[in-house]
Length: 491
Image (cartoon, rainbow, N blue to C red; front, side):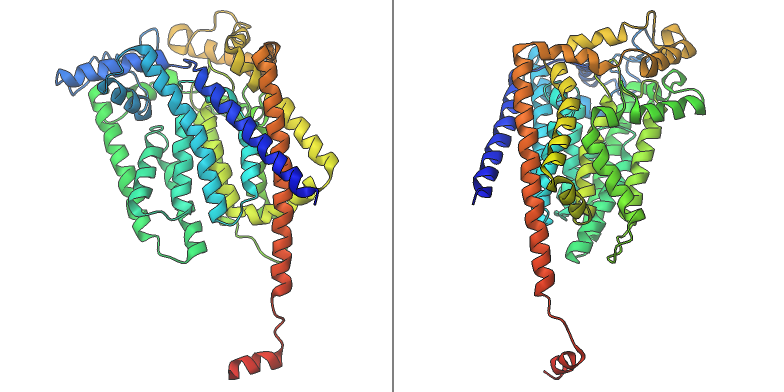
């Protein structure tokens, strides 16, 4: 009888924690990343279209100080679509436009949580929702959800793609989700296709229904996104390719440097995803490894895991080949963030049942539960600090002097600076901790702690219930004997 009040209190604690964060995100928008350049680029794009200049408008063919070849810039469609719509609807001032972009970031994170709840309930894994929420509350999304950068909206669109495919939504919804996922980055097409097809295959396995219509819808949505991105490139570069992206100064030179950055994207103390978002990284890794090493009687299909591994490897190597693999000068692994929640959700859909007994045993001990909470909370504290004092991490970049972009100071000099920052200097999270000294930082830390602990308690309770239900189903199955089967056949 004590268990019910405990779980109720945990639900109230988690709801209060997440509600507080959402309110804080809405109340404290922050203009970050390249947003001012994006706004200027939208203005330039509108001007070009108004003047009927549809080919290489303002294109110079040379990089300026900011690394641009045209006033429109080189950012993907996702950066411009909501901003141009805002301008056309009358939001012409920068504060109004940045406010809309910040609200879209909040919507991306909140929408991801809502969709995860729906998906995990529909695939009969409701307990894992609390694990998903623990992952959200222990992530850099805490600081990024209030910013104007496009990665949080991209997160929501990619989670929407996973939800639409695994729930086998109508073809037009799958097409719309594929379109939204593709406009997040020009390099996202193969990953969107892989995620979408995997989700549809898992849906067909669960429902037994044909997925042909959804495939057609997804291909159509992808094609429309590709055409629009190509048209945008023609307007700003005079070619369907993104000339800015393809400039050699934007590429990482040498296989050795690419492999170094690939490792850094995983474990660097200043940008590694296993450092900045351990909970999500561990869950996706476990889902990928378990089917390959499991020796249980119920053989796990390794093909979804192989697809997830291919996506992760492709993303890491692709980002490692970019001149700034973390998305600096921002906080942590910004460019990696949009992909983690969709990968987590897909991993739970594919292997949530197989991970259930492992997680249940891990959380069964109160001491182990508290240890997981303390590790997760400790790694989350820098994200809370960054939320309240985002300028503090500028000190991290100031550790290396005269570190100029490749087109201004030289390619080798730039990557030498990056090498020092990635491995040799004081890690970025230590600078972010300065924000915990504020009143808001202390209060937010308490709210996050309550949410993390409540999520783990609810996850443990839910996993125990699902294990009991599974055992009951096994016990309820009739044991078929030879005589019984013959009698059944006669009937």
